[in-house]
Length: 95
Image (cartoon, rainbow, N blue to C red; front, top):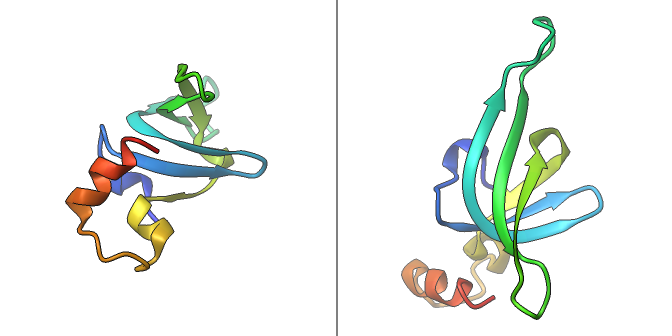
């Protein structure tokens, strides 16, 4: 599993929520201070992903509190490939 601190802008990841899964390119992480000081800041991840087979691209804003885990393609394959990471990153652009 990948943590938010390990995310690199421009890399693709799978973001798991309770009811949805997004495979997309990580764009930005924002932490917005809450209006009420005693509450934790609101944390969001911005992800560019393909909505459907017509190649529509959408920027999705995901609340960090709703993300259960984040994985890279190599973590998804779990050692089931002999391809190096640089080849996987090229393949991942077409998924």
